[in-house]
Image: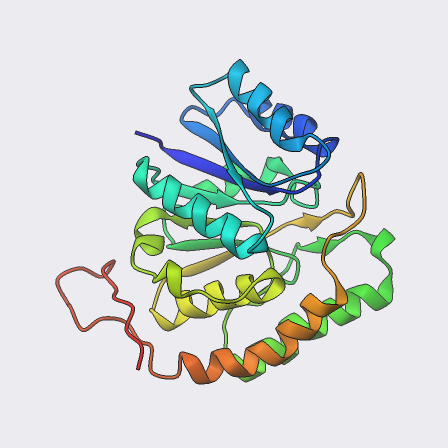
Length: 257
């Protein structure tokens, strides 16, 4: 039985991965385990992940996937693995240190009172690395706090944040196989579905750091997809709502027409 699981999708992160894992281990949090989901890396990341798992087989596991399917496939596979293995809290984070492990204790504490906790750049106390430049900040801020929120009528302020902590029950009542978006759109769709289902969502401020090693894998095509897919999500989930079951405020069903 796992208490909390950190899911780290990787693709060619051989330099970042061992440092991140060491920092996660340094948290020394009882019940915290790691799942690395490698997308057919060509730089030895998958092999390195296996070697790390051999060091601590009781707290680090590895899933190997083909590169096809991208972020969506990695996280869906990770979520399902976490649920099957009994994780109570499921954390998703990037491998490039844009998400500092130091926020995990705060997110887990907040998750005791929320179905989903999002590490946010756009609430009081949140911040983006100044090295990213003012134009990148403004584009991201506008896309999150104005464009996506206005179209989808979302309460979440940082809808594309990939730093999240879910209670397992919340993911169990989402049709994970029905999630079709990838990249930025995947994060938007998951947040939108959670809100439409009536889940309690909390945001905690984080400092979003520039990637330490390597280059971003998020291409312009992913940003363009996110822009038009928001309209599709608004239409697709227009009738999605919490279940009528009043027996438990935590029970929701996923219904589509």
